[in-house]
Length: 392
Image (cartoon, rainbow, N blue to C red; front, side, top):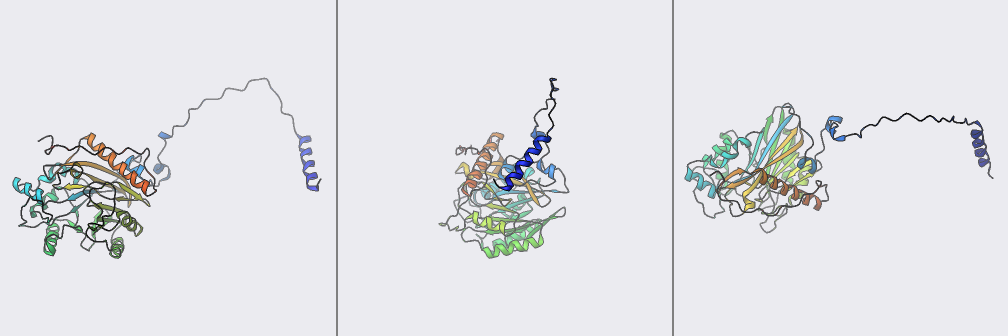
């Protein structure tokens, strides 16, 4: 036996010799007080316990547990619509009605109730635009539609898309001037549109990727320039394949960029939120490195009545606490009478949001990112609704 073992044995023997016997008793111990299991549902939230804002996720977006404090000193809201195209049939029916506020009336009280309302205008507006409801793909709208944009509370108008240039540089210039004359700022033409909301500055830039590739050098430089001028950088894109529920490239148009790749680059280069449009269907969203990417909001004002999917869209309200996005909500609508969006019933709205959540989860699975739980089933394709709204 090794000397070390001898020492160990000796120590154990000494401990045994010095042990004190435990006294025994035949008296029963007192009964323990029963305590209910803790109910973690009534505990303070992560944000309340730590003083830190919650981490953004698909789960927190579609099934929010965090209640945003009603503190106007900290909270700012950004509202975003789908594509606004007051051309072709919309222009025809508004002219026939002598009412250029008509497309915007049913939703105006909602869309103007945000700190900033941001739209994508996809048709030049000028006096003398020819009224033609035919199947033309050369778009323009009457200049009086600007009053509808005022009614809906538009603050920032993105002009970087594939139809704003349908009437050349003059059409773009006339539209830009018209919007500024009516108190709106424009993005997508180079300068950063900056809006100060109670001390927090939002900077908006826009890029068109339909018919051409997005200039990544210009994108990176634009984000850097916006970051110098603003606290929150909002980048809006016109991109992706049409009539799809998930974002993808469309080389045949050509729309060569993969929106997912461009969106990830945009966040990596310093954007706080990415806004997407063009596909004419609303699409799933993504949370990438804690930032929200919206790929498409659908049509908002347009005459594509030939399918239910092109008649449906969502309005997104994105809520910031300070400079951090902490919540989002979406409200679905359906287009009637070739140009007028009307909010859906509660049941149809729930189906649209389930479709959006399911699409977001499908994208997350494809990108190996966290999904919501449980993952909802994708609802079937919607049935065609009547041409006129139920109340007419």
